[in-house]
Figure 1 (cartoon, rainbow, N blue to C red):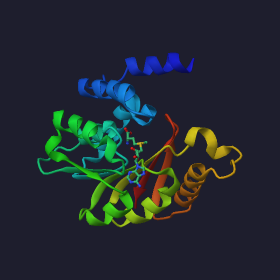
Figure 2 (figure 1 turned 45 degrees about the vertical axis):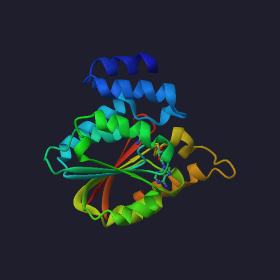
Figure 3 (figure 1 turned 90 degrees about the vertical axis):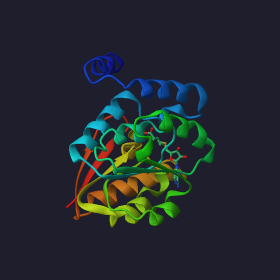
Length: 211
Ligand SMILES: C[S@@+](CC[C@H](N)C(=O)[O-])C[C@H]1O[C@@H](n2cnc3c(N)ncnc32)[C@H](O)[C@@H]1O
């Protein structure tokens, strides 16, 4: 039933842009762990949410093959608007840059290779949107680091916050990723500086609005 409904949804939402279909296919053919790629539904959701915010500056932690960055870039209307996206894995640089260059947003995308924890402080921008999708173990650290760089009224989106349902299961010994997500979810729930809601789509996506 789930897969029938998934197909129904995909047939009744905006089509996936052609470059993103190619990117998704190439990701599945050439990359290890292709399931990390956002894909059609999550991509359209990210694009829609970002367009509603009408952002000038977006920051993404965890680029991978660039699918989500390209979806969010669709919302950058002004000529001098920017998306900064960071990934620690230099092996995906060539693959991902190739798709960025083929896109209509090449001039607006700033692709940083390195550890987000080191790179975030070097980007001198106040962001309208930050998408957290890098190392699950340290989501809380990312949150603390980006918080002052988010505009008042700005949006933080955190991916994988239901972590395949593990957030409500018995924690396995040494499962640092699940622990990282659990700590992050508790931290956000207790943070009065923000409004928050968890969207139960795909692997869970938390929307956090800075008051
Ligand atoms: C889930 S994937 C990102 C998927 C992408 N946002 C999308 O939706 O298509 C996570 C990425 O985070 C990167 N990553 C992990 N730790 C990182 C860190 N400390 N700094 C920057 N990137 C990191 C990984 O190399 C991986 O490519």
